[in-house]
Amino acid sequence: MKRFFLFVTVSLMALTSCSSDKESKVTIVTLDPGHFHAALVQKNSYEQVSNEVYVYAPEGDDVAEHLKRIEGYNTRSESPTQWNENVYLGDDFMEKMIAEKRGNVMVTAGNNGKKTEYIKKTLEAGINVLADKPMAITSENFKLLKECFDIAQKNGVMLYDIMTERHEITTILQRELSLIPAIYGEQLPGSAEDPAIIKESVHHFFKEVSGNPLKRPAWFFDVNQEGEGIVDVTTHLVDLVQWEAFPGEIINYEKEVELLDANRWTTPMTRAEFKQVTGFDEYPDYLQKDVKDDILNVYCNGDILYKLRGITAKVSVIWNYTFPEGGGDTHYSKMKGSKADLIILQGKEQNYKPELFIELVEGVDAAAYEKELATAFAKVEEKYAGVKLQKKSDKMWQVVIPDSYRVGHEAHFGQVTENFLQYLEDGKLPDWEVPNMLAKYYVTTSALDMAKAKSAAQK
Image (cartoon, rainbow, N blue to C red; front, side):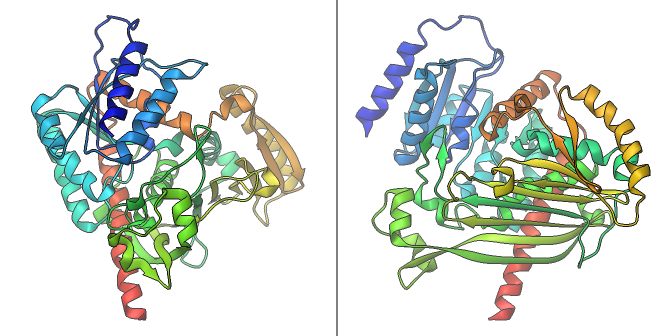
């Protein structure tokens, strides 16, 4: 194992021999990278970020896979990066990182059971944190996260989570259209039986990342380390509800959030499937609690029904083992206005590519609305060059989006990082970001408590 790390470090140093000597304002420290999202932050280079990166981690497959991905970015033929990964391996990696303090931005994406504590110690050392979601997977984590934001403020550093879905073009345009009364009307309040905002995300254990089959760590399937689905992927969905329905507004979770219902359920995995995605022949001891009749049952699915400022929303996440041919992870979203619904579909009919539709609400005069729509949408076309409307029926229009806007999920990590770098330069986050991060994690962690209590009562 040590020979491998030595090879990676030396080869990356050779690749960066011609890098600029220009002093950079930002130096990245990568802490215990266990999820491929840690590498995606470095898929591209940034002018204000040093090519010297400091990695602190325990020995093992997690850091080995991370370094392979970085080496892949450095050695690709098109727009190669020039990262020089300076690697420290040891059980005291956290203490070593704090003592050496070689960078001013710590990136963490990995074991979510440890993440909140990693964040706290890093902020206490006066280092900024760019964290993959989720930053909290339990109510206890949420209490600690609140402390983390206080520590960040006290020490003059920033804590920010990576919300990639805000950069997906269909979501951007869904929000844009929802803010135009001539197109959307007013936001409907909805009800528990008929939520006004619905978001559903379907993911897959076995898939490709950067063109290669994704190898997941075995701990990914332990809810005590990864977190249940209801507190993991739903982080994005809850974030989007807030970001779209109340853009730029501060949310007070203690007064403006009301949980109505929450559920959790498992996805089964055979031993052969587990081996295919992890490389492990046997289930580790920490997974035995979830094994029945040699089938691993992972609590990775969940849904949350809640009210936000009186608007009823429902978010849900579903995990399957793998996707159908030609498919991938999918997103469904529906926002209900008094004039029209704004719907994102990403199924087989859309070739598994997200598409945005405008659907007229029953009872609205179609002829009059079509004229209003054309006039109002002209301003959208001015703002987003090449975007246009295509009529599908008397009550349905598709928003046609040029491929130039469809940069893909992996590229969104670079976009989030660029935003964070700008915040560092500005010296502050937008006023609404911290309270809304707290609101988001309050919803997810409180929903887990509700779902667990519901499961226990049903037994």
